[in-house]
Length: 333
Image (cartoon, rainbow, N blue to C red; front, side, top):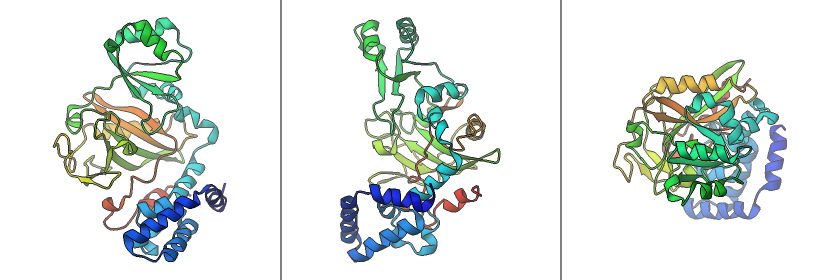
């Protein structure tokens, strides 16, 4: 589907009421004329592929045409996705049981899938691991993930009955590198590393630190987590972290550990792992890898066949008002 077709599809599905609420919200926030905001929002959709959420998130009402044209929007992200990813191969990454099978080399931990496994396999897994993660094979944004402690169940049979009919993968707990755990120990904090595979060569186009917060044991931005940009060459966190409410953190609010300026261990190994993994399923040329860091090196937590575009260019992280579209675009012919 071309850009125009995609835009018409988006417009057809658009929540018009929500869009008008967004116009009202931005009018009250900025004092700008509502009619201007509405038509400017529509123009940004037609010209840059930006939805009303992009328009608000990137504060496009404060950007000139040249600046706007540097942002990767939902429409542009869709263009990359359609160009580099073949639909029939999406389940090989999207489904967690397929992902763990295809990228087992990079998981470096014990795991099993619930479907097709007999009771003996479950029981043996429970005996090997006092704690483990249970992840729905179709889960997203860290939702419906369970951290299971075997001792909290009255018997292994009871735990088996709880899990046997669920479509999940069970994974050994990741032991986080102490330097990364010091920032927030309740979650496995990861670096979202986006690769584009073009003409047989893998390129890293974005690296962002995703950090847990609150009482959550996931680092997802949509589950009260926070994000911060990482220098792709050095592995150093460049700016303060930000959460979805736009609070900025130079240090973690729960641990007091410094975020900005943190340097990741095993950084070169992490980049090399992502570039190598990008070749495993070359039909999926645009992937966001979630990389965790252990005392022995980097490992994959999961990957995203449709990498999000929002966290890479938040206004608080782009004071020069320049987005990442030029960097992404250079690899598209």
